[in-house]
Length: 203
Image (cartoon, rainbow, N blue to C red):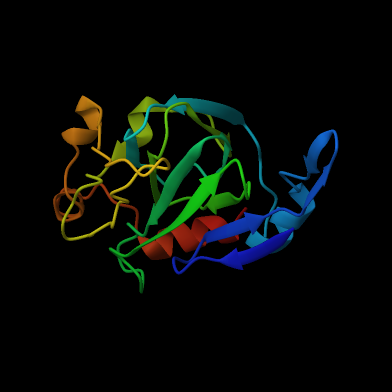
């Protein structure tokens, strides 16, 4: 499995080696020992989630309070999504920046998103199925979001679906009403970079 860091500290892309034959294909989609080596501490799997999205559906940008936070190991087992990580940690050198990668059922990449980072994606075809391995259970009082369309963050969402048709972003009411990054910062809702690093060092 190949690993490369994203431009946002605390996020990595994992590309598995695939073994096709006349029966289909085999691959290792998750390696706990490798992930531990990369992130510097064990990944404490507490919950798995699955979402199935129509073309154009945007989910995010979501994050959780730190501590405890919620790290995610994200794969797309069917279809394709453009997956995005946003640095929302106040005081981080890359605060307000984003990075993205295509997750699909061809290359079968995965993205690891550390505690304290924002995460979201747009579905590039109907039925895109995303699986999340999560380091903590869902806690609705600690879950937050920022607008995926915040012009100050400037995420360059794809304009074309996988079949070449034009994409129209479709957001939930909650995500559409999410604050901008600046609004979330003013309200004190964002994680602090140094506090996140201290928390991670204790894992």
